[in-house]
Each structure stands twice: as C-alpha cells, then as structure tokens.
Length: 222
Length: 314
Image 1 (spheres, rainbow over the protein chains, first blue to last red):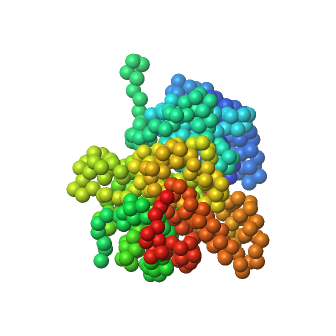
Image 2: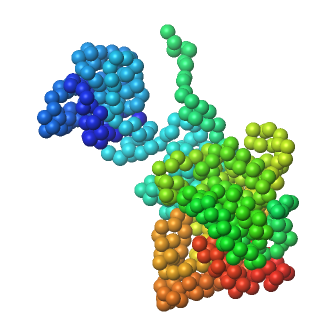
Image 3: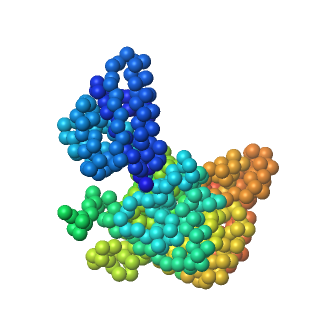
C-alpha cells in the first residue's frame, strides 16, 4: 500500500488559515489502512483544528467527508457538493489523490494534509516499512524476493557494502541490511550461488528518472 | 611536468615486489600547498598515494585535482572515485579527464553514505554500484569504448582497484563479493584497516582457497592508532570497522603520552603478520591526518624502497 503520515499540526494550521470554510477530505483506501487519512483521522484532525482556531479567536467552519478513493474520478465526484460549499480542501490522501482532486475542481485550492512517504507494508501493527520504489523493472526474482533498490541505502545491485553489521544497516541500525536478508533467504532456498552472478547497471528509464510514467491499457479503453 | 605512461604501482606489483601505499585526504578548502606539504612527507617511502574522494561524505578538494597536485611532486597517485556523488555520465567523464591529466590508478568505491557526512541532506546518486563501476573501467580499457558503446579516440588504460572489508557481515558472502570484484576487473584490492588479525587470516585463507590471491593483488589496510580514544571512537562510530576489545585494552593500558607509540607497535606487528601471510602483495597505510607516521612506520617495518628493493610479495 501507499504509506503516508500526517503533516505536523502547525504546518497544517498555517496552510489552512487563509480560509474561512474548510473541507477535510479523507481517503478510505491506503491511507486509511496506515492510520493517516481515513474517517477517524479526518474527525480527529477536524477537532484539533477547531480547537486550535478557537484558541486563537479565529472563526473557521470545518466540514468532514471521507470518500472511498481520491485517485478515482467515480469517487471524487461524490465530494462535488461538499467541495463547492467550502473555500478550500485539505486532502488527507496520498500525493496522487491530492492531485486528482485538484484536477477535478480547478477553481478550488486543494492542500496536502499528509506527507506521502513510501510504498510499503505494515510489518506489525503500527510499524510500516518501505518495500518498493516503483522502479518499473522488478528484479525481485534475482534477490530472493527482497528489493535491494528500495531497502539498501546505497541501492547496491551486487552484494552488501562493508557497512553491514550483525544483520543491520550502517545507515540506520534499526533497519535490516537488505543484502543480509537476501543472503539468508537464498541460503534457505539453496540458491546462494546465484549471487555470484554479475548484475548489470539498471536502465533507469523505467523509473521516474525517465520522466513521469504512463501506462496505456488499450484493451481497457472505452 | 606530469609523467605519462603506465602505472608504476601496477608494474611494481606485477614484478612481484611488496608494495606500500598510503592514504591522503584532500583539504577542506582550495589550499594546494596543504596537499603538497603533506604529500612531501610520503615521498620516498611509498609507491603510491591514495587520494580519497570526499571521504566520510564531507566536501573536500576533488580527488582529481588533488591527484594532479600530487603528480607534480613526483609521487604517483591512486585516485579514489565514488558512485555516491556521480552518475555514470559523470563517472566516465571524470575518468577520461583524470587519464588525460596523467592519473593511472583508480580505486572504485560506492563511498561512505551521505548521512555520515557534513551534508546529510544531500541526494545520494548511486546510479551504478562499485562492481559495475569497476567493470565499466575495465571494459573501457579492453574495448576502447564507453558504456554506451561509443568508440573513444583514446581510451583510459587505468590500473583498477576496489575495496574489500573482511570484517563486515555476512562473512560467508565476503569472499563471493571479492570474487565478483575480481571477475569485474579489479586488479588490486585495498582492505579495510586490519585490527582483527584472526578474522583477517580466515578471510585470506578463504580467498586463497577460491584461488583469488592468484588473480588479484591484495593490499592489507594498516592504521596506526594514536590514542585509546581514537580506538574506541573507531570501534564504535566508524562504519565497517572491527577493533577487538584486546586492542582497545592495550591502548588503554599505556600512559597517554605512550599511546601513539603503542599504536605504532600494533601496526608494526600487523605488518609483520601480513609479510608472512601468503597472498598478500603489499600494505596500504591509512594514517588519518598523520602522514608523518607513515615514514616512521615504513622504516620500522624495514619497507623503505631501498630496503625492500629485492623483497618479494607473497
């Protein structure tokens, strides 16, 4: 899923303060799962903002709405009425959601309430870890199902650097060394010898380095 | 006058002679005299000076420029180049430039991660990794073409090296990685500073078993410790460093004023062990900001060029 976290309250307050009527728009998919932008988070943030502005003696009217997904027009349309009634939208979606909502409502300021952080998993409740860089050229088959691009701090393709110690990464001792995970897994699978093979440089054009990417599924076009 | 022609370090190692190189970090500023003064301390006692490339991710004078200053003093530089700061276009371009300036040795590294430096907010490039870089330098020499396949008017003929850390984990993979570096084209290997001689011997044994010491010149890393504090700091803070407890205790066990002497003694003992170790072709001294120690160490080890004229590598 796409993992995000809420921006600091002070930053949000500064961003929304020019507006008298604000819609906090939640997103019920990825960011709900990572406790950043679902219905509950919308309600909590709305209360916090009301309180903060009340303390400052500023009048602000805050409405709340959460739609299934902010990255699909079908759902975005459900917010049309609420958006039209407000001066601005504080979107608690990922960066894609914020932009899609902004695209649909051209005359309305749409502000980001979250920092979109990574594509990852919930390793255990409350702990989210990055697993994928969306490079567009998946090589997980070569490295035992562990992405060294997303999980090695130096993006090394041919084995661990000299900073792997006790299974941890030198850059952050709280993080596993991705290559240690690869080696452990390939040892278990009896394929450690595969790691003797040279991996050539990547073609970064498949990644964002080649500019924004687009996929056209002609078979799905109506 | 900048000397041309092939790498003297390569010639020396090829002839089977025991080689000594030392590290020199460029200054945090544009002061060329600082390099020349420090390089002059190494003159006459080492075969080549290894010039770091923004080591520990701290901005310093570029490795290429520092190498040229060193060339002018008559010493031969080994230019370090990291993939941390340059993509493949910049790496190849700098390689061409370095060769045109008379630099003949290169050590290809991924580099210390930028978060350890003075500008942790910088973007780390890591377009290619150190092994891919070694291979591209080798291929450029062998095919006369750059990474795009374009035929170069003059292709750099560099003596290519890489680093190895026998003390990092996972230990069982360290030899595979060494083999990959050699396979990619590394002709010489500089190791991480050796303090844990037991682990180093084991690593060398595995390297010999794989036949790797027949294919590459291994230069053992030596760092004379200056104080117990330095030993503790390096053990705890420097990534990839392995300083066993007994070395730290030894440094703590002598009065402060004698600590540097004890550090030299430990370094000498390690050098003597390396001289006996089959498969070792030389040493690389990393006397951090302490170049004057290099001459004393080399002399005490009986490795001054005149003394080792006839001495062979293992």
